[in-house]
Image (tube, rainbow, N blue to C red; front, top):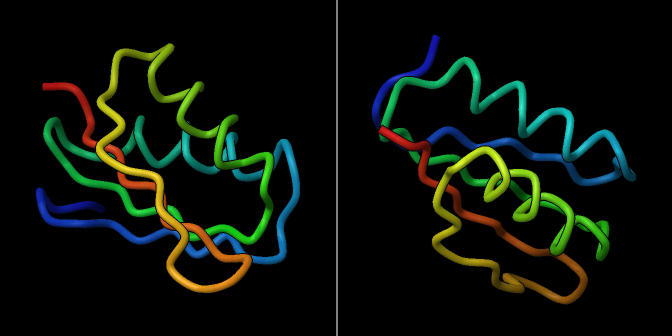
Amino acid sequence: MYSAESVVLDLRGYVCPYPQLATARALREAPPGALLEIITDNPPSCENVPAVARREGHQVLSVEEVEPGVWKIVIKKKQ
């Protein structure tokens, strides 16, 4: 379902815990080394989504505000 390239999850409009659950599922389905880009407008997700990824051993590459009130979280799946 996923390639080693970036997978984008546009989760704008969703609140916790949905962004964390969707990210965890995408990481399970993605191949090792895949990049996930999570787009969210839910401020708590900027802390909660990276925490879930780190707890599972994945690498959080960045959390950045890409426009007012919208963030992009980039995660690299563990090998």
